[in-house]
Structures are given as C-alpha cells and as structure tokens.
Image (cartoon, rainbow over all chains, first blue to last red; front, top):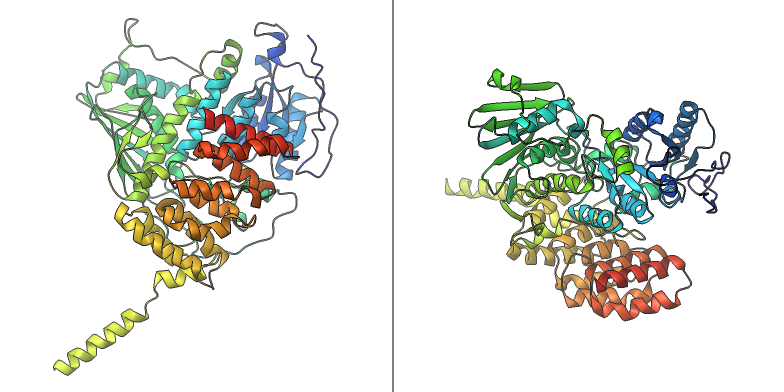
Length: 433
Length: 178
C-alpha cells in the first residue's frame, strides 16, 4: 500500500526559513501492518535540547530495530539545525525535516511516533496533539507539569488507543527490577516506610534579574506557549526553566519522578497513590527561580506505609531509595543495590512467585510495544500516577498543612484551594480541550 | 524612667511603622525587580484557610484598583485570585477579561473559580475578544462545562471565518456534552 497523502512544506523554522530538501517518501508502519517485514518506525522529535539531544542519540542507535528519525523540531533554530545534521550524518541520508512548530510533526501523516523532550509545561499539549493525530508517543519525565494535564493526556491515550511510554527509564534498569521483585515478594516482610533522597534544587539565584533581548533564531513566544507571559531572560529557558514553577517543579518532579516511580512499582500502586501528604519547602523570597531550594514531603498510603522524600543540600546527580521492612532495609540507586542483610541480595525469585514485567532497554521496549500494541514498561498512566505524587508534594509544601487525597477521584478532600492547584489555565490559543 | 520607656517604645514603633507594608509595595512590583513583598503575599495566599481567603481576596482586588498598579502587579494579583478568588472578584476582572491584551491573565484567575457569575462573565466576553485570546476563552468555557455557553459556541462553530475558531468551538461543545 502506497502512502499517497500530500506532504506539506515541512521546512519552515519558526515560521521563517526554508531549509533543506523535501521529506523523502516514507511508508508509516501502520500502513503496512504490524508484521510487515519491511516495516520501519518513523519517528519525529519535538525538543532536541539537552535531554532531547540525549534521547536523539539513543534512538539513532536503533536502526537495527527498524527505527529511523525523520523529523526534528525545536524553537531554538541552532539546536534544531544541529539535530538535523546529527540525524543525517548518523543515518547517512539527507531529508530529515526540521521545523520550529511541533504541529508540523505531530500532524505529519508519514510519522509513526513522536518523542517529546520539551520543557515540562509543553509535554501534555504536544503529546495530546500527537495522540489525536494517530501517533504513539514517548514523553520525557516528569510526564506533565500539572495533575490536570496528566489526566487529559491519559484520557487521550485511552480514547485514541495509542501507545505511550514515559522517560522514567529506571523501570528498565536491572538494579531497580531486582529491588522491586524482592519487595513485592515480601523478602523484607511488611514494608513500614520508604525514604527517597533527591538532588538539591538550584540554591543560588540573585534576588533580581533583567529582561534581555530574545536571541535571533529563538521563538520565545512558542517557547512560553501555554505559560503566562513573562519577559525573556536567558536563565528562564534552556535547562534553568526547571527551577521556575511556571514551567516545572524543580527536582521534586525531575528526580522525584524517577524514585517515587520505583516506590509506586514496589508497592504495587501503579494505578493508585497515597491518601495523605504533608510537606515543608524552602521557597525563595525573590528572584527568577521559584521552586523550593529544600524539599521535604511525606505521603501516607492506605496500608500505612509512609514515603518520605527529601532533597540533599548539594546538587550532585542521582537519588536513592531505601525500603524499610520487618527484616531490615533495602536500598537501590543507579549505583547498585545494598541491603542491611546481605544474604537477601543472593536470594532467587522462584517461578511460583510474583514476576515483575521486565524491560532491559527503555527505548527498545517502547518501539517493541509500538509493534505489538502491548503496554510499555512505563505506560503514560503509570507516569501520571507518579507525577501526581510529586505534584502532591509540591502542593503540600505550598499549603503547609496536612492534605487528604482521594486517589480514586484524584481530588483533595475538603480543600478547595488545594484542588485548584491541580491545574492551571493556559494562555491562548492553547488549551487542554 | 517612665518617660524613657515611652520614648524607647515610640522609637521602636517608628522603626516598625517605617518597615514596608507588602500590600502597598506589591502595587509597584516589576518583572525582574525585588519580589520579596509579592512572595510574602503569595505565601499567605497559598497557605490560607477558607476564611482567610475572603480577606485576602479583598486586598488583592484593592491592588488591582490602584492607579499605580503595574503590569507585573496585575499579573501577580491574577495568579493569586486563581487560588483565593471567588465570585466577588468578578467585577474587578471583567474589564481585563474583555481586553485581548489582558484577557489571558484574567482568564487564568477566573477559570478555577466556581460560580454562575464567573460563567456569565466568561460567556459575555466572547464577542469582545479576537484571535488567540478568543481561542483561550473558548477553551476555558469548554473546560468549565457550562451548558449555558453552548449556544454562543454553536454560533462560533457555525459562522466563524477562522477554521481554528470553528474547531475550538466544536471541541468545547463536545467536551461540555460528555
């Protein structure tokens, strides 16, 4: 079956410059059917900055799995062009499309999947648009900025029957899989508590800042997108956006989503969450950065387990999670697994015990699931629940009081103000509708 | 001795009274400027009880009414009213809502506030707005799921010359009906 859909001019960047050759003819995998031997999965990237660049490198190594990058988008023209050059060099063919408008990718008829690595405040809108236009999606963590966005994104995925993986790649890591299997099979006995440590937030920020000219080739209006208008200053955007509450929730969601995700997995709570939360954050009194420099929040699950999340003083990378049980503690990070009782680490999980689904490679798992239409290891609905808990922590730190949470209804109990903090109105023309 | 004590007390009072008052200072808030006073108010709002919200709302509306209120101060107040506002702040927000330059921030405040007065204000602003501000308003009307907005949205869906407007109106109508 030949794809006869007309192609749009896919070459504008920030609405201005036509750049390269036309998009080569692509036959999307869904046209050929899931078992077609010649099938390729054609991928478009939205956001190719720091994390998007890492993701691009990962996907460009998957041609053996029939995965090819066909289009890249970034509101920063230099970054978009650099990504295009990288793709064409690695795949040894020209014609990678480049644009500054994500809709040129999410609505392109010849693409099968979209990878979203934008700042957090864009995740939901780009993901939903891609899903509505028949794409499977990989969305960086944290899945969304707000709880309401996560609900809308998961609803869209279910309605349109798309595959969605989020970037909590520790679910594809051996140390974490091993830990979760040990906990789920009761090797620690009854779990009483969980301690998570995440890197510190940006601690040093001047109390004032200056508006700066928008650099040439940077589409600032599109970068802001649904967020409230604010003057441009360089520290607002690339990477540092993470420390401004209009666009992200700091390390509370950035690293919190990785390790809260492991707690949820180990507790078997992927479709639920805690029933209360309280927290205390150290919020800056002035300056560009608005996330708390010190983070502490504690959630309690209905079964009595308390999960405590706190930040370190320094910004050193990686976090760590420690499970406390009747038979001691078990701790895992990206460096490995350790236990109070070392013998525990040698125990085997028998065939009659709980077997946790296994993914050895987060990206390959996503693309395999596109072919098989099975749920990936970090399905969007799982990512939503994890991101929700990080949001609960932030809201509790802001409310400075104990909050009750109904995980079935996804609402706070008897706290209208906290419920308002589950979402934010978007700047026109953007909307979750 | 009593005189000295009174004098010392007066001096302390003078120092205390010279300390800036956040509600006066926030009127002059500028993007990039010292945000200390705004953050003091923000902390009060985010941690407020239901009873405290009513008093905070009055003071926030008061900032909007100040002649010297800057754009940054107005935007800040809208963010705070999104948390602490009620139908009581609607009259203060309506002029902002009906101006395409300020509609987004007014809508940011109004969208999460329950109540018929908010629904009516949003509905009545439809003919006043154009372009992206109107698209944003259509989205808010849809998300609030107010059936009374459907006739106006139907008109937009059927008669707007702008395809994006027609699509947004159709989506809002569908969402309200779900």
